[in-house]
Image (cartoon, rainbow, N blue to C red; front, side, top):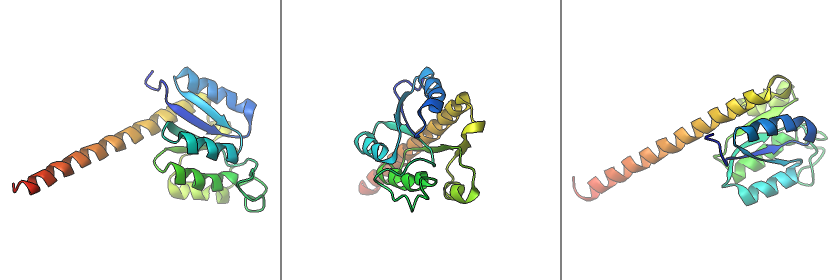
Length: 164
């Protein structure tokens, strides 16, 4: 299990339906933390951002104290606002939107940013695990590519400084 110890943060106010996803993730070796509203999610991310491998975000949830009910349309768009807060805290952590919301105007922001959006009704737990595995492979490849680029730049700088 290559996912052993990788932390997935699940932000969703629905406890029972998410247990199937949590079980599937844990079976694949992931550690899972679930936050039920934006305040606890932002607090958790602030304290644990270096350990979080992937964030799974619902859109429709109570706004908590962090966001205004009017702005979030009584919670219908809380995830849209929460996404910005999460991205500010951990800009390189993959975020997957898993929601029952299907209004194009609410999802437009995520589509425009190239964020994966999955409907809960059509995303079985095993598919979610596969998608997260793919997201982590892409993240690891980007990190490896960056290391290669940094190494190459360092070699070029040494050559320049040495007059080669």
